[in-house]
Amino acid sequence: MEAYVALEGGHVVEARGRVSGSTRGELVFTTAYTGYEESLTDPSYEEQVLTFSYPLIGNYGVREERFESERVHPNAVVARELTDEVVEWLDEEDTPAVDHLDTRDLVTDIREGGAMKCGIAVGEDVTEQDALDELDACKGMSEHTEIGEQVSVDEHEHHEGDGGVDASVTLIDCGAKGSIVDSLNARGADVDVLPYDATVEDVESYDTDVLFISNGPGDPANFEPTIELVDHYVGEVPLAGICLGQQIVAEALGGTTAKMDFGHRGVNQPVMDTRTKQVVMTTQNHGYTVDEPGEKLNVTQFNVNDDTPEGLENDELDIITRQYHPEANPGPNDSLDFFDDVLGMTDSSQTAVPADD
Ligand SMILES: NC(=O)CC[C@H](N)C(=O)O
Image (cartoon, rainbow, N blue to C red):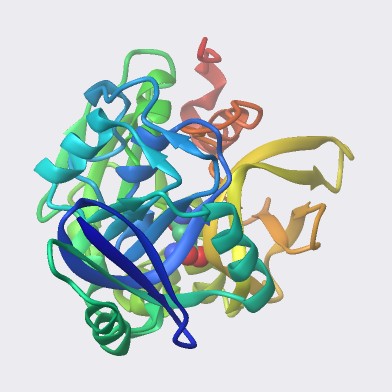
């Protein structure tokens, strides 16, 4: 099958078509060697095209128990070599896929030229022009104003904890990874998942010891209802957030966010804690960052590569957020204790039994 990837600026790369279809999106990458099942089902990749810099993707199969959500989220997949098993899965999911191109080269282009849009055309008789037409129609991430709707649950879900901490977490689903719920449940906390546009009235129907804002795709400015919700609860209940969740909490507290040149994308991003000076390796996939945290949030952790804020906290207001993914999946488990710290903000934490992960 013919396949073309048109990059912002008009350069077109030829590839081998594996799953047919035409699509577009911001071209993002991951440098992880493993974890393709988790990354492909991470809702944070909604409306993006995911490129793997590691050359062989699919070599240990496809298992549902590793999925982070119920479907594949990137609009298309670009790899050096995809196994037939992964291609079958992507075909079932109607996700166009291409391989036999130098993805390390593509990643270098993104890192040197910055985040870029792309158009992809795959099929028996597609042309370069088809890919260029897709590129023409490609929106920037901030223009996807309905993205919260696309990735969030429609209605409330309850996930029972496994015993241990007697706490109830209300998780606002902006595109949550399943491992966030699992990490909280494993420590005993019950989790009530609510849509990204849940109102104060909705949240009031549940026991909320912690209001937790999930990860999710794109520009935090597209999550206005969530920002308003957090604004209402500052100082009322403990607040936690991961990735998009950190950005939303910062915006709600008067901080600002900005688009990064090419983001943090991999499972070996070094983060230092300003208090302990300890460095942990972290999983990251974000294109926006907190620019100014605002007056109420202290930067307690930062990225060793570029100094951007990785952890924001306020002890008095009981707020703790992370820009990286402490729940890992994929990636290192170095920072799983974040979930103990989050549940430590609840009254019931005195009875906390650390989870055995
Ligand atoms: N993984 C995420 O939550 C992504 C965060 C945010 N949407 C970004 O791209 O910056």
